[in-house]
Length: 138
Image (tube, rainbow, N blue to C red):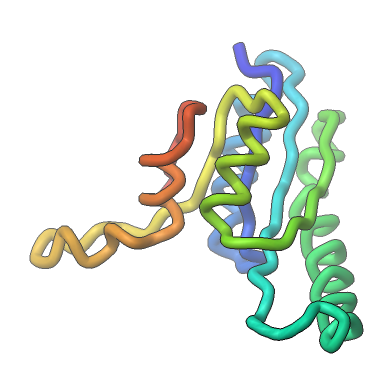
C-alpha cells in the first residue's frame, strides 16, 4: 500500500493522532515513517543565531524521539528530519524529493460560520500544493 509516509509535526500534543494514524497505516505494509519538523528562520543572519537554532534543533530531536516511540514499539522503520524554511514549501518539497506516498497531517476543525478563516493554515497549504495524497487528521 504505502511505502513512505511523511508526518509533519510542530512538537505539540495535537500531532499525536497523526502519528497514530501513520503507525496504523505503516503496519499494513511495513512503510517507512518520517517525522519532519520545519524551523522557520528569523530574518537575521543564521550565524548570529547559531546557538538559538542549535537549541531549537535539540528540542525538536528530543520531542520527535518521544513522538516516534509508538513507531519504534511497533517495530516500524522510522526517522526524524529537521529542516529550515517556510513550513508548507519545505514539507511539499521534501515529499517530492523523497518519493513520499502519503502525507499524514493534523488539522484544525473548520468553523462553519467562517469557512474561509482557515484557508491559510499549514494543512490547507500542504493539501493544495502537494503532489502526494494528503490525509488530514482531526
